[in-house]
Length: 326
Image (cartoon, rainbow, N blue to C red; front, side, top):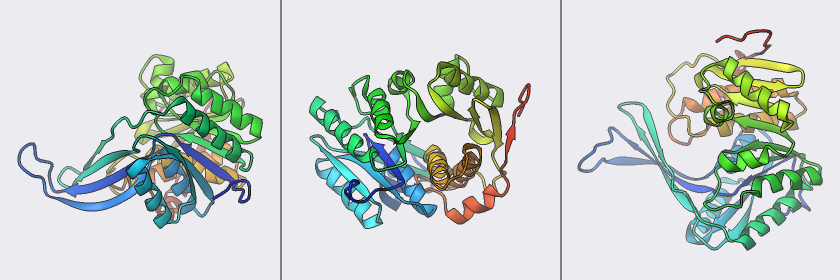
């Protein structure tokens, strides 16, 4: 799909996508063979999962991603077969493959992910060129997922400037040094998980107060207009210059199975709602419901829209005043 001839409300970029092989076993054994049932083979990675979630909610999104050699060709075929609008950026090394194992006995999931390919300087520039071209023809641009090994320290910061210059709103869900350097720029919305938020404030994120502190620090730095920190099973806190709003996660009808795509589901629902004209607190309500619907499923499965609708009816953003408690 050419974004210049087919503009979309939402575009995403995944620099380090995966082909996810999902298996199910009765029990994962330390010796001998663990007989498995193949559950699915699908393309994955932050931005691809976000685009998939937007589509599942009835929206339209273009997934921009790298694709290298034989595994990259398989990734392209899988996304084509799924009917997901995507635009590959060719690279010289193989796209990574990941293994997801769901264990029925313990209702646990194990997600084993290699570090992925290394991009050349020319390939990084090609990615930035494609991001520039795509961001000119969308309203919201999502930068999501893990970085490739050896990625230039300024890559995500450059993406932030590029998207801003193109006139799109950047939604960032990244980690590590790429997040650190990007925070010197000002973007529309930053989503933090508990690990990144804890690194930011220097203590574990155990409740809503800690999430408020992380968001406040981002806003004080001028790093973003809106900040969202997730607090695991508790839900999330969304914040802007008008204050903090606590969004408690709904009670789940079944035990959690896997959190592999919960963050991507949250970002997908938020971005879709924003593209539909919702304000950020309302968008975050649906995001928390989508994340909750996803953790009920094994492996890298993502929510069903009907489940999100059911859970969203039980989710409300409540303004935080004074001390916030769980």
